[in-house]
Amino acid sequence: MSGNRHRLRELEALRAFVTTGTTVGAARRLDVSQSAVSRSLSQLEARVGRSLFIRSSGRIQLTPEAMRLNDSLDALFETLAVIDEADWAVREDEPLRLVVPPTLAHHFIIRRVARFLQRNPERRVQLDIQSTDSLVSGIMDSRYDLGLTSGMIQRSGVTLLPWRRSHIVCAMPEGHPLAAKKAIAPEDLEGVALIEFLGRLGTRAQTDQIFGRAGVRPLTVVETATNMASLELVREGLGVTLVNPFPLLSEGIPGIVVRPFLASIIYQTSFVLPTGRTPTEAARQFMRFVKLTTGKDQYSQEIP
Image 1 (tube, rainbow, N blue to C red):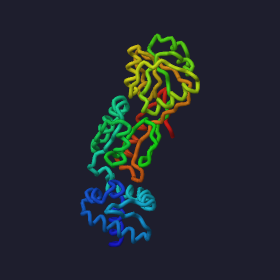
Image 2 (image 1 turned 45 degrees about the vertical axis):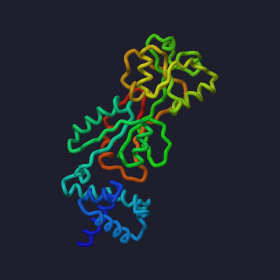
Image 3 (image 1 turned 180 degrees about the vertical axis):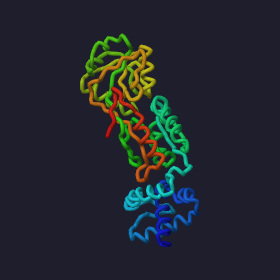
Image 4 (image 1 turned 180 degrees about the horizontal axis):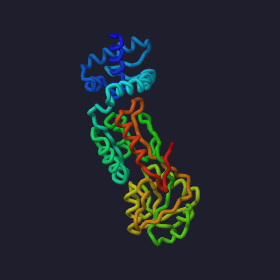
Protein backbone atom coordinates (compact mmCIF):
# COMPACT_ATOMS: atom_id res chain seq x y z
CA MET A 1 0.00 0.00 0.00
CA SER A 2 2.85 2.37 0.88
CA GLY A 3 4.42 1.74 -2.53
CA ASN A 4 1.17 2.65 -4.26
CA ARG A 5 1.05 5.95 -2.38
CA HIS A 6 4.56 6.76 -3.56
CA ARG A 7 3.59 5.95 -7.15
CA LEU A 8 0.58 8.22 -6.93
CA ARG A 9 2.70 11.12 -5.67
CA GLU A 10 5.04 10.61 -8.60
CA LEU A 11 2.17 10.61 -11.11
CA GLU A 12 0.63 13.69 -9.48
CA ALA A 13 3.99 15.43 -9.81
CA LEU A 14 4.18 14.54 -13.50
CA ARG A 15 0.66 15.77 -14.18
CA ALA A 16 1.22 19.02 -12.30
CA PHE A 17 4.52 19.58 -14.13
CA VAL A 18 2.91 18.98 -17.55
CA THR A 19 0.07 21.36 -16.69
CA THR A 20 2.18 24.21 -15.30
CA GLY A 21 5.37 23.73 -17.31
CA THR A 22 7.77 24.20 -14.37
CA THR A 23 8.71 22.45 -11.14
CA VAL A 24 7.96 25.70 -9.29
CA GLY A 25 4.44 25.77 -10.71
CA ALA A 26 3.95 22.08 -9.98
CA ALA A 27 5.07 22.56 -6.38
CA ARG A 28 2.67 25.47 -5.96
CA ARG A 29 -0.20 23.43 -7.37
CA LEU A 30 0.52 20.41 -5.15
CA ASP A 31 1.39 22.55 -2.10
CA VAL A 32 4.76 20.88 -1.64
CA SER A 33 8.36 22.02 -2.01
CA GLN A 34 10.08 22.29 -5.38
CA SER A 35 12.64 19.73 -4.24
CA ALA A 36 9.84 17.28 -3.43
CA VAL A 37 8.51 17.65 -7.00
CA SER A 38 11.99 17.15 -8.49
CA ARG A 39 12.52 14.09 -6.30
CA SER A 40 9.15 12.59 -7.34
CA LEU A 41 9.92 13.14 -11.02
CA SER A 42 13.32 11.47 -10.68
CA GLN A 43 11.77 8.53 -8.83
CA LEU A 44 9.11 8.16 -11.51
CA GLU A 45 11.76 8.16 -14.22
CA ALA A 46 13.71 5.47 -12.38
CA ARG A 47 10.57 3.42 -11.78
CA VAL A 48 9.46 3.32 -15.44
CA GLY A 49 13.02 2.82 -16.67
CA ARG A 50 12.75 5.36 -19.47
CA SER A 51 13.99 8.87 -20.06
CA LEU A 52 11.03 11.16 -19.33
CA PHE A 53 12.84 14.49 -19.07
CA ILE A 54 15.64 16.38 -20.75
CA ARG A 55 17.61 18.42 -18.22
CA SER A 56 19.72 21.27 -19.56
CA SER A 57 21.00 24.50 -17.97
CA GLY A 58 18.72 24.11 -14.99
CA ARG A 59 15.61 23.59 -17.12
CA ILE A 60 13.53 20.44 -17.54
CA GLN A 61 11.75 19.53 -20.76
CA LEU A 62 9.35 16.67 -21.36
CA THR A 63 10.17 13.82 -23.72
CA PRO A 64 7.48 12.30 -25.98
CA GLU A 65 7.40 9.31 -23.60
CA ALA A 66 6.45 11.60 -20.72
CA MET A 67 3.64 13.16 -22.75
CA ARG A 68 2.27 9.73 -23.65
CA LEU A 69 2.45 8.64 -20.02
CA ASN A 70 0.59 11.77 -18.92
CA ASP A 71 -2.11 11.22 -21.55
CA SER A 72 -2.68 7.72 -20.18
CA LEU A 73 -3.39 9.14 -16.72
CA ASP A 74 -6.72 10.77 -17.63
CA ALA A 75 -8.79 7.75 -16.67
CA LEU A 76 -6.92 7.34 -13.38
CA PHE A 77 -7.49 10.90 -12.22
CA GLU A 78 -11.09 10.90 -13.43
CA THR A 79 -11.69 7.83 -11.27
CA LEU A 80 -10.04 9.47 -8.27
CA ALA A 81 -12.21 12.53 -8.80
CA VAL A 82 -15.35 10.40 -8.70
CA ILE A 83 -14.17 8.78 -5.47
CA ASP A 84 -13.51 12.19 -3.93
CA GLU A 85 -16.87 13.47 -5.26
CA ALA A 86 -15.09 16.38 -6.84
CA ASP A 87 -13.33 17.20 -10.09
CA TRP A 88 -9.59 17.11 -9.38
CA ALA A 89 -8.91 19.88 -11.88
CA VAL A 90 -11.76 22.12 -10.78
CA ARG A 91 -10.06 22.63 -7.42
CA GLU A 92 -7.23 24.53 -9.08
CA ASP A 93 -7.52 28.24 -8.39
CA GLU A 94 -5.39 29.37 -11.30
CA PRO A 95 -7.38 31.43 -13.83
CA LEU A 96 -7.77 30.46 -17.47
CA ARG A 97 -5.44 32.85 -19.30
CA LEU A 98 -7.24 33.49 -22.58
CA VAL A 99 -6.08 35.68 -25.46
CA VAL A 100 -8.00 36.63 -28.63
CA PRO A 101 -7.72 39.28 -31.37
CA PRO A 102 -10.04 42.33 -31.22
CA THR A 103 -12.65 41.16 -33.75
CA LEU A 104 -13.19 37.78 -32.11
CA ALA A 105 -13.10 39.35 -28.65
CA HIS A 106 -15.75 42.02 -29.13
CA HIS A 107 -18.02 40.18 -31.53
CA PHE A 108 -17.82 36.61 -30.31
CA ILE A 109 -15.81 35.57 -27.27
CA ILE A 110 -16.80 38.11 -24.60
CA ARG A 111 -20.39 36.87 -24.50
CA ARG A 112 -19.18 33.29 -24.24
CA VAL A 113 -16.78 34.11 -21.43
CA ALA A 114 -19.69 35.65 -19.53
CA ARG A 115 -21.90 32.61 -20.06
CA PHE A 116 -19.05 30.23 -19.24
CA LEU A 117 -18.47 31.94 -15.87
CA GLN A 118 -22.18 32.01 -15.12
CA ARG A 119 -22.32 28.25 -15.59
CA ASN A 120 -18.99 27.60 -13.87
CA PRO A 121 -18.76 30.06 -10.97
CA GLU A 122 -15.74 28.24 -9.54
CA ARG A 123 -13.69 29.28 -12.58
CA ARG A 124 -11.78 32.50 -13.17
CA VAL A 125 -10.70 33.94 -16.52
CA GLN A 126 -8.05 36.46 -17.49
CA LEU A 127 -9.04 37.74 -20.95
CA ASP A 128 -6.42 39.60 -22.95
CA ILE A 129 -7.03 41.18 -26.35
CA GLN A 130 -4.02 41.22 -28.65
CA SER A 131 -3.07 40.99 -32.31
CA THR A 132 -2.55 37.50 -33.70
CA ASP A 133 1.23 38.00 -33.70
CA SER A 134 1.21 38.92 -30.00
CA LEU A 135 -1.18 36.05 -29.31
CA VAL A 136 1.25 33.56 -30.83
CA SER A 137 4.29 34.91 -28.99
CA GLY A 138 2.35 34.93 -25.71
CA ILE A 139 1.28 31.31 -26.13
CA MET A 140 4.86 30.31 -26.92
CA ASP A 141 6.16 32.16 -23.84
CA SER A 142 3.55 30.48 -21.59
CA ARG A 143 1.90 33.81 -20.75
CA TYR A 144 -1.43 32.42 -21.99
CA ASP A 145 -3.06 29.01 -21.72
CA LEU A 146 -5.35 29.29 -24.73
CA GLY A 147 -5.84 31.49 -27.77
CA LEU A 148 -8.48 31.75 -30.47
CA THR A 149 -7.83 33.26 -33.89
CA SER A 150 -8.83 33.21 -37.53
CA GLY A 151 -5.35 34.35 -38.55
CA MET A 152 -3.23 32.37 -40.96
CA ILE A 153 -0.52 31.02 -38.66
CA GLN A 154 2.47 28.91 -39.62
CA ARG A 155 4.72 28.94 -36.56
CA SER A 156 6.50 26.23 -34.65
CA GLY A 157 5.88 26.31 -30.92
CA VAL A 158 2.11 26.55 -31.16
CA THR A 159 -0.49 23.94 -32.05
CA LEU A 160 -3.65 24.88 -33.93
CA LEU A 161 -6.91 23.01 -33.35
CA PRO A 162 -9.09 24.14 -36.30
CA TRP A 163 -12.68 24.43 -35.23
CA ARG A 164 -14.62 26.58 -37.72
CA ARG A 165 -14.28 26.94 -41.50
CA SER A 166 -15.55 29.87 -43.57
CA HIS A 167 -15.18 31.12 -47.16
CA ILE A 168 -14.25 34.63 -48.23
CA VAL A 169 -17.17 36.92 -49.17
CA CYS A 170 -17.63 40.29 -50.82
CA ALA A 171 -19.42 42.87 -48.66
CA MET A 172 -20.87 46.06 -50.18
CA PRO A 173 -23.22 48.92 -49.26
CA GLU A 174 -26.93 48.48 -49.89
CA GLY A 175 -27.80 49.69 -53.37
CA HIS A 176 -24.34 48.98 -54.80
CA PRO A 177 -24.48 47.92 -58.51
CA LEU A 178 -22.83 44.56 -57.69
CA ALA A 179 -25.64 43.72 -55.28
CA ALA A 180 -27.70 42.58 -58.28
CA LYS A 181 -25.33 39.63 -58.74
CA LYS A 182 -25.73 36.33 -56.88
CA ALA A 183 -21.95 35.93 -56.59
CA ILE A 184 -18.94 38.13 -57.28
CA ALA A 185 -16.04 37.03 -59.49
CA PRO A 186 -12.61 38.72 -59.46
CA GLU A 187 -13.36 40.18 -62.90
CA ASP A 188 -16.38 42.00 -61.46
CA LEU A 189 -14.06 44.17 -59.37
CA GLU A 190 -12.15 45.74 -62.28
CA GLY A 191 -12.02 49.46 -61.51
CA VAL A 192 -14.37 49.08 -58.51
CA ALA A 193 -13.61 51.04 -55.32
CA LEU A 194 -12.14 48.47 -52.94
CA ILE A 195 -11.29 48.58 -49.25
CA GLU A 196 -8.28 46.29 -48.82
CA PHE A 197 -6.20 44.96 -45.96
CA LEU A 198 -2.69 46.16 -45.21
CA GLY A 199 0.07 44.42 -47.12
CA ARG A 200 1.51 42.74 -44.02
CA LEU A 201 -1.64 40.64 -43.58
CA GLY A 202 -1.95 37.17 -45.12
CA THR A 203 -5.32 37.74 -46.79
CA ARG A 204 -3.97 40.71 -48.77
CA ALA A 205 -1.26 38.56 -50.35
CA GLN A 206 -3.88 36.02 -51.42
CA THR A 207 -6.27 38.57 -52.96
CA ASP A 208 -3.36 40.26 -54.77
CA GLN A 209 -2.46 36.90 -56.33
CA ILE A 210 -6.05 36.29 -57.40
CA PHE A 211 -6.36 39.72 -59.01
CA GLY A 212 -2.97 39.29 -60.67
CA ARG A 213 -3.91 35.94 -62.24
CA ALA A 214 -7.20 37.39 -63.47
CA GLY A 215 -5.54 40.54 -64.82
CA VAL A 216 -7.86 42.65 -62.67
CA ARG A 217 -6.99 46.04 -61.16
CA PRO A 218 -9.49 47.21 -58.53
CA LEU A 219 -9.40 50.81 -57.33
CA THR A 220 -7.95 50.67 -53.82
CA VAL A 221 -9.43 53.58 -51.85
CA VAL A 222 -8.24 52.68 -48.33
CA GLU A 223 -6.24 49.98 -46.55
CA THR A 224 -6.97 48.83 -43.03
CA ALA A 225 -6.01 46.12 -40.53
CA THR A 226 -9.26 44.63 -39.23
CA ASN A 227 -12.47 43.15 -40.59
CA MET A 228 -14.56 45.47 -38.45
CA ALA A 229 -12.82 48.57 -39.76
CA SER A 230 -13.25 47.44 -43.36
CA LEU A 231 -16.97 46.73 -42.85
CA GLU A 232 -17.55 50.10 -41.18
CA LEU A 233 -15.92 51.78 -44.17
CA VAL A 234 -18.21 49.77 -46.45
CA ARG A 235 -21.22 50.95 -44.47
CA GLU A 236 -19.99 54.52 -44.96
CA GLY A 237 -20.27 53.92 -48.70
CA LEU A 238 -16.57 54.04 -49.60
CA GLY A 239 -16.57 50.80 -51.57
CA VAL A 240 -16.65 47.01 -51.30
CA THR A 241 -14.39 44.72 -49.31
CA LEU A 242 -13.36 41.05 -49.21
CA VAL A 243 -13.52 39.56 -45.72
CA ASN A 244 -13.85 36.50 -43.55
CA PRO A 245 -17.57 36.48 -42.66
CA PHE A 246 -17.19 34.63 -39.34
CA PRO A 247 -18.18 35.85 -36.84
CA LEU A 248 -18.91 39.45 -37.86
CA LEU A 249 -21.47 38.71 -40.55
CA SER A 250 -23.06 35.67 -38.91
CA GLU A 251 -26.02 37.76 -37.74
CA GLY A 252 -25.83 40.35 -40.51
CA ILE A 253 -24.96 44.06 -40.33
CA PRO A 254 -27.57 46.69 -41.28
CA GLY A 255 -26.71 48.59 -44.45
CA ILE A 256 -24.37 45.88 -45.79
CA VAL A 257 -25.10 43.33 -48.52
CA VAL A 258 -23.01 40.13 -48.67
CA ARG A 259 -22.31 37.97 -51.72
CA PRO A 260 -20.06 34.91 -52.16
CA PHE A 261 -16.68 35.73 -53.71
CA LEU A 262 -15.60 33.20 -56.33
CA ALA A 263 -12.08 32.52 -55.12
CA SER A 264 -10.55 29.63 -53.18
CA ILE A 265 -9.73 31.50 -49.97
CA ILE A 266 -10.74 29.50 -46.91
CA TYR A 267 -10.44 30.71 -43.34
CA GLN A 268 -10.05 28.46 -40.32
CA THR A 269 -10.89 29.73 -36.86
CA SER A 270 -8.68 27.75 -34.52
CA PHE A 271 -7.92 27.28 -30.87
CA VAL A 272 -4.22 27.94 -30.24
CA LEU A 273 -2.28 25.94 -27.66
CA PRO A 274 1.41 25.67 -26.73
CA THR A 275 3.09 22.75 -28.47
CA GLY A 276 4.31 20.01 -26.14
CA ARG A 277 2.15 20.97 -23.17
CA THR A 278 -1.11 19.35 -22.17
CA PRO A 279 -3.97 21.89 -22.12
CA THR A 280 -5.19 22.78 -18.66
CA GLU A 281 -8.53 21.38 -17.59
CA ALA A 282 -9.95 24.92 -17.69
CA ALA A 283 -8.78 25.34 -21.29
CA ARG A 284 -10.31 22.01 -22.32
CA GLN A 285 -13.55 22.87 -20.56
CA PHE A 286 -13.74 26.29 -22.23
CA MET A 287 -13.06 24.84 -25.69
CA ARG A 288 -15.87 22.32 -25.22
CA PHE A 289 -18.17 25.10 -24.03
CA VAL A 290 -17.45 27.32 -27.06
CA LYS A 291 -18.11 24.46 -29.47
CA LEU A 292 -21.37 23.49 -27.79
CA THR A 293 -22.73 27.03 -27.55
CA THR A 294 -21.99 28.21 -31.09
CA GLY A 295 -24.99 27.71 -33.34
CA LYS A 296 -25.16 27.20 -37.07
CA ASP A 297 -24.82 30.15 -39.42
CA GLN A 298 -24.90 30.56 -43.18
CA TYR A 299 -21.24 31.53 -43.52
CA SER A 300 -19.33 28.95 -41.46
CA GLN A 301 -19.29 25.25 -40.70
CA GLU A 302 -17.89 23.37 -37.74
CA ILE A 303 -14.80 21.28 -38.45
CA PRO A 304 -15.32 17.81 -36.90
